[in-house]
Amino acid sequence: MKKHRGNASMRTLLGLALIVFAVLLFFKNIGIHFSGMLLGNWPIALIVIGGVLLYSGKKSDDENKQTEFLPYFLIGIGVLFLLSKYSIISLSIGALIGPLVLLFIGVNILRPHKKRSQKNYSETKDEQATDADVLDGEWEPMDDGSIKSAAPASNGEDTQIDVFTILGGGNFSTRSKALSGGNVIALLGGVDIDIREADANQPTIEIEVLAVMGGVEIKVPPHWDVVVKVLPLLGGVSNKTTCLAEKLSLPKKRVVVTGVAFMGGVEIRN
Image (cartoon, rainbow, N blue to C red; front, top):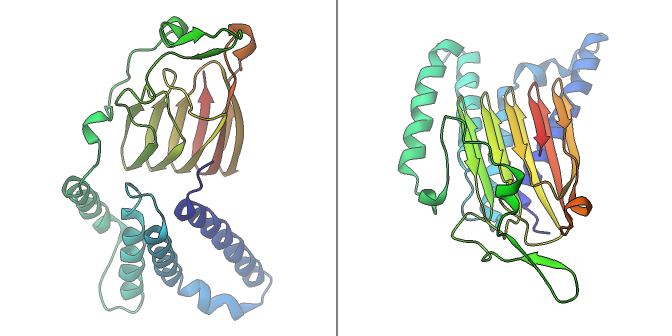
């Protein structure tokens, strides 16, 4: 299984940051105020997290990371609030939203996207695929009684799910028969991932999800066994899948969904 060092660092940092913040807040609430200086300078934490994410992202061998904007975003927000704290500039949340949205759109347009034409992003729901569409012509029997995919390895489709949305949403779908996993990040938005017509190139793949005040819905093939390891923090996780591999006489594949749902939701279904 392919490991994503940059994303693993992000998940680790998020968990450690929440634990440290909880401990400091506890001491403050019981009258121990040595944490006041740290809590009062919380923008520094954003700068540090952004710097570590930037460093770990450069070490990662994933050359097409759509999350490369996140470290700069955290560093920028941290610097702005730190300057505002010391009255160097006047800053409000309302004054940030509009420029940040336009900045993100501009950077996203200028940044080169590999295989962008192969991706299917839209703001309308795609037509629902039936089980017959998923299975029709995709499998062929072998002499030993087993079943293998009759389609090409990739069919020109994306083999890696790599989606990053902020203050918006959309759909992503692929029919690749060599899917190797991926990453989904939804910040203040929603994402619909449809891979019902795809298949994995190995028995087990991993999809990492980060939903912050947003929602992620993942539709998987009927012969996939879903294992959910998502941590809900003031959010929810729902697994509505049923593995029908044995009933359909298809080779069972396993997908492990990991990540964090912070004030957001993650739903997996067939």
